[in-house]
Image (cartoon, rainbow, N blue to C red; front, side, top):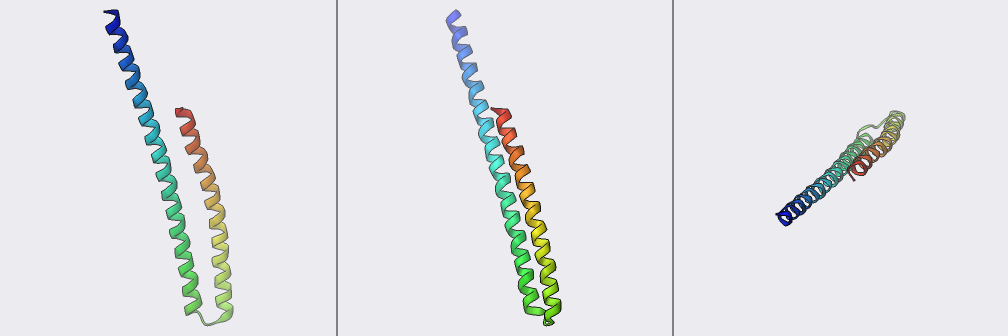
Length: 103
């Protein structure tokens, strides 16, 4: 009878460990998915901005207006890059903290 309890406890422990490992793997996959999605959104946004710059170059003939417009876009890109760096840092902190707390 005692031996059956031991095997039952071992089976419960194994099941618990398998579940914990599965949760960690899922959490890491979710973290990677979030990071990948963030990267894709960032790249898509930068592609849109590059297209805008090309359109400005192709359509605006007044050099002064073109120059000012490019300067505005450059300022937007600068702010965007700073914002992305900040969000990326915070995202990494949150993801790493969540993984660390689970361990």
